[in-house]
Length: 225
Ligand SMILES: *Cc1c(COP(=O)(O)O)cnc(C)c1O
Image: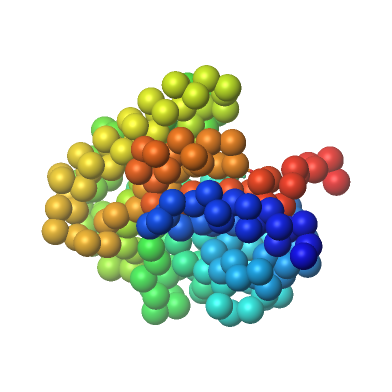
């Protein structure tokens, strides 16, 4: 067995029932994704539009591609034909572009609203007030080619597990309020995307339905090359 397959098997054995594992393959070569694919993995996460497009072309059609990073409006066109879910909607303007690009391909693209739950300034995401304003806007109500399926967030990168847990819990509370407010009848509004290699166990405890795990499967990323 390859090390990717071994890592995957280990991570999978720790995933709770009802939680879906996204293998975050950003910066990693196609051959490593293929190893994960051969070991049965179908959900992959990427954070650069062109990189995702290239990998989509190189891997089987069965792969479900999840876009998890900050998405610039002018890059949406690269992924609109095939992306399965965009986790990182952080503005009405971005959602409008996704809606337009999806329409060009006759698709409805599943999206998550990304919330800023960490103490770090650098992480992207909406506040709850901004999300409510987005959901109540006429612009949003006129969209027919995007479907909001839940929320996404990243906890603070810290050893303080109590803080991480509190942040995930906060995201779940936001999810519940938004569901009640705007999606009470919508069975598809059910996703809580939270948890990475070092904190997905806590995220699952706090109700994650999608966990995004990269380095625990593919090894550390080397951004120098
Ligand atoms: C890179 C990344 C991950 C995976 O991080 P690991 O620590 O390697 O598991 C998860 N979510 C987002 C948004 C990412 O950018």
